[in-house]
Length: 101
Image 1 (cartoon, rainbow, N blue to C red):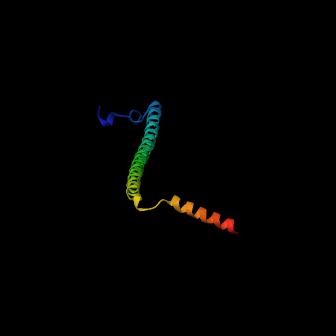
Image 2 (cartoon, rainbow, N blue to C red):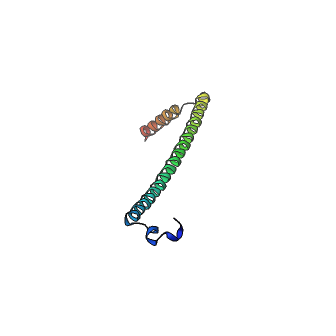
Image 3 (cartoon, rainbow, N blue to C red):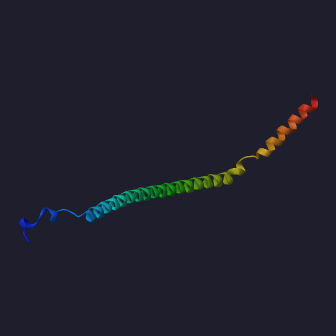
């Protein structure tokens, strides 16, 4: 069959084909939208995981720093007198003041 023998009726689509193509394009459109949404959510989840990992690392560094500081305080506490002594001393002085007034 050459191009001169094709009629306009054979080149056009039947109504069933048009409906099928319309449904296919709608499905493709829905599929594309779904794919975009899934990719967006996947990206958001990856960002959240990275943020959680960073916060965890910062927390661990802070805990290590505080432990180091506490170890230093424990190692040097012998240099200082206990605060309890001063509190007791102030209590006794205040008690004496009350007794003599």
